[in-house]
Image (cartoon, rainbow, N blue to C red; front, side, top):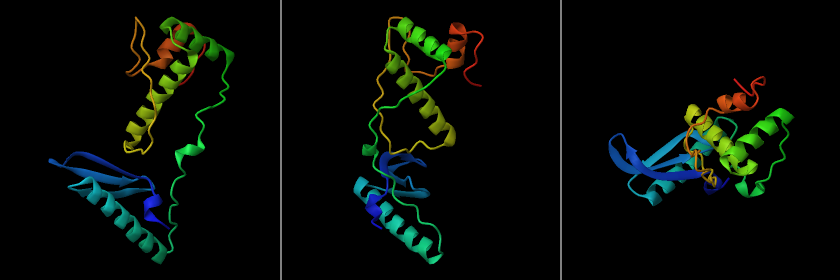
Length: 161
């Protein structure tokens, strides 16, 4: 298996008081390498993947396969929801003077960010184009309490915890 097929992310940052490059591998969450340059951190990660695969093979452990490339996704999703929820989101989007699609994408982006932060998994090699939703009244590039907004639109319906 080619170690370069794995999802390796390298970022520059300050780690334990020292500025350096950190390399992580999504398929091997415990694998982290540090170096003085991007190239060195990447090379160390590739070497660590190869070593880990050898050790896993010796111990008859399952070797994670490289993740599929994100090009397999079209960016289109068919979504079904209760009519009352559809109405609530439509009213909210109209109030904010944005499209329903833009509002839902923004809400999903915030939820994904919160989920990754809660899991402590902030090193996702996934990049998403997030378009800030703004209007004359509210900027939505911040935390949202969706339950409060939906309760205003539909006080008798609960859409989550």
